[in-house]
Length: 299
Image (cartoon, rainbow, N blue to C red; front, side):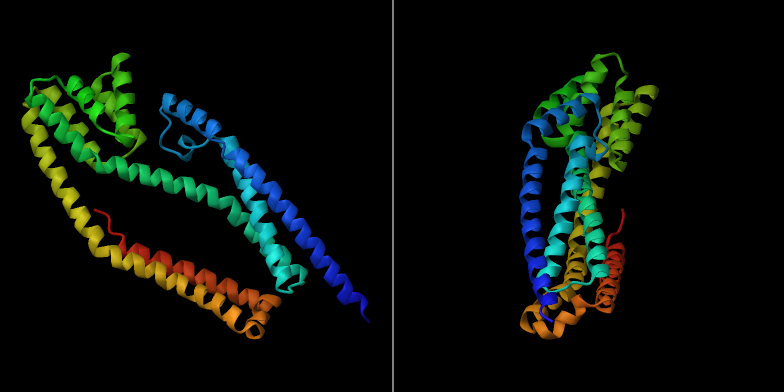
């Protein structure tokens, strides 16, 4: 009669020991994967090749795969250990939860670097107005367009500086300046940059006043930038509410689990309970993205 509880107890000890050993191994693997030397070397290689429009600008493919595998194993092992700690021994639940955790762990690094890429693009886009102002000032001072571009590249920082250095290098290698700028747009698509490039190309072909055209383009870009800033301020509350409303049920579930453990245990110990949790998470995700789609207005 006492054999099953004893086996369960020792099984829990073995699983916890396995989870701890797995955690140590994964942490060591993650530290190695996030080696600064390796990341810096790959970043320099990507910059020299102009590869800046995907996540491999920040990390090479092999390292990303190692991190994804490590995160998947780490998260699935942590989920199994947590469920066993909560006295969940149903094989279907353990296998399904571990599989979902592994998939989520594989996706998390991709989401992280995609977010970094998106922030880099936003930082670049916010510098377009400064680029237009810098070119206008340089042309008014009597500089040629390539010279004004090079002078501005020395003053700017961040993604704009990196991109302009690529443009200047391509121009020195014999590529026409409008074509080099167009290749920059292909790497980081931006409506304001496209407007600036088209204006430069058409003015160079028609022989018009580049300064007058750039001044008008600068005013247009400034108006769009100010409107976008006001729009973000007006929709900031909606974005925060979407996040808060999505996290509220999860926070309530965790609090109730610790406050009244006996009431919430059936939710994690039965297949029906996990189905209910799955439906809840699915609806929460759908609601979050619907609200974000409403408040995210493209200009």
